[in-house]
Amino acid sequence: MTWRMPAEWQPHECTWMGWPAKDYEEDPTENDRAFAAWSAVANAIVRFEPVKMLIEPQAIETAKKFLDHRVELVEASFDDGWLRDTGPSFVKNEAGEVAGVNWIFNGWGATSWAIWAKDQHAATQINQFAGVQSIDSKLINEGGGIHVDGEGNLLLTETVQLGEGRNSTWSRQEVEAELHAKLGTKRAIWIRRGLTRDYDEFGTRGHIDIVACFAPGNTILYHDQQDESHPDFSVSHEVKRTLEEAGDFNLIAVPAPKTLKDKHGWVDYSYINHYLVNGGVILCAFDDENDAQAKAILERCYPDREVVLVDATPIFARGGGIHCITQQQPK
Image (cartoon, rainbow, N blue to C red):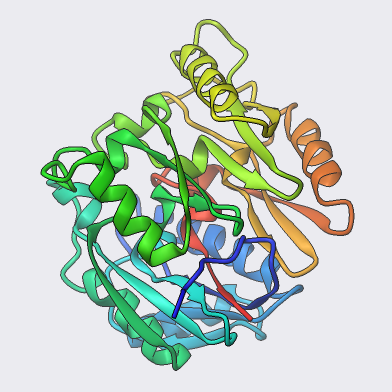
């Protein structure tokens, strides 16, 4: 039996999310900013498809103040709301059955700041809630570290898959073999590294889902930092060269936001971190003059979908984006 991860633009049964943890910063208003940011994404998605929100029982009453009533609250035990990384990667077989790949999650490479005692079991819980089989993997991986087109191609980065704290004892060939076996892919396109900010203390060390992603029509979108003063200027050029060498893909540069820095330094704001839903695209917005240009690009890629801009700045301030907090379950 062959399992295959469908492309994100294929029909969804629902979207899984997780209510964000409290106490991101000492300022208590930051909790409300997180709740509002996650809710804005969920409320945008639920217009198009069902949303199932994992939530600890003590947070339910607070969540109801922010969430659309159509968002289903699912009581669960977990640490934080990065469901792309802690949840399963859903796959399908020839009979149309759905299963969830359960990667090993260890807090983005056993980082000193991460807590994952509960999150390491999040994928198993979601598979049980969804009523699907769990397929266990020995690979340390997160959903933000991979991207597939459903046609056998896979995008990933060296610094995530082969980096210290994850699979540093594995060879590239061993990593590829495990990913191909679990996702039904046949070809891996390796990007050397991710965006600069992602290597700061609270980064993932190079997740692909803010760097490049597939789109229909043999297309790859990639993050294009056009300001030479930003360290991602050279990263973008390297990514473009790698993708050009990968073959006959239609490459589309998606300009980075004009904003270069926040109070912590260089930003990794990226429109690549959008999320596809049934009939829609939920696109990161940054109150930036390039928001409209990114929206136009996504509208050309998905002419039959409504592109909805949602402020992702508060999510990026916590280490991720819209794609990082969502996980699609295919029909």
